[in-house]
Image 1 (tube, rainbow, N blue to C red):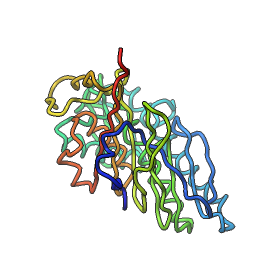
Image 2 (cartoon, rainbow, N blue to C red; image 1 turned 45 degrees about the vertical axis):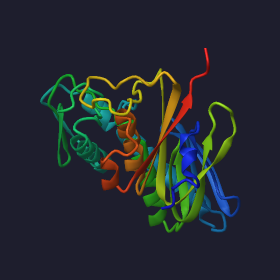
Image 3 (tube, rainbow, N blue to C red; image 1 turned 60 degrees about the vertical axis):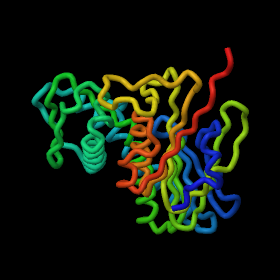
Image 4 (spheres, rainbow, N blue to C red; image 1 turned 180 degrees about the horizontal axis):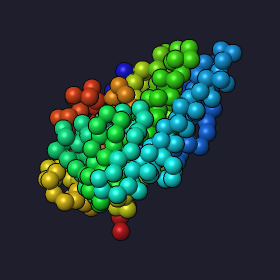
Length: 286
């Protein structure tokens, strides 16, 4: 994976993640899913290009149907409606994402929390059985499931015989095979975009935080055990957190960890083969 910027000082510039597809030779399609626009790119020289794109979209739609808290029939919505002590059977998507979420919660000492503070230990996953331990717990997988959906789409493409391409779900991007995707940064203050990195066979995710965000960026050195993250420094109007990792699930989830800790060098990143950047842009003068 190549996700290192061309010049290290550029990391301090106002930025947000975007991507530019390879210029030629690729069949691109987009569809609204996961509350955003999902783009799939596959080789246009292959007669299976349209079928491959459909396969990727179907894989993402299946994850959405299982894990979106806004889908009344989803496993997450059904769990949230349970009484304490009840349980439901969940499928492979929920098992994978909840297992990853629990691991990250444990390793981050509770900083990453898919219950959003409602009851971090109020749920338990035993194989395929998801039990509600607290009446207060409500799960939201918004901060990790989108990355998992991208990974599932890539896996489905590979299983269908597609050897290279990319999937981009609103900034959660993964490329595979020979597809080298340019990651560009939008200048939120001055406008326009500039080159940041190229992504080859890896994942890259960016999350945006500002004063209106439910999850605000913590100041470096803030106490992770405090009830709420420290507010963003006054000098910054907003911050974008970017993470590169082998899998999009981890890239997606780790942007939240970096935002909540305020630490782009967080010690957990190395264990996931990840690298992070904080892109802060200044507040406009009053």
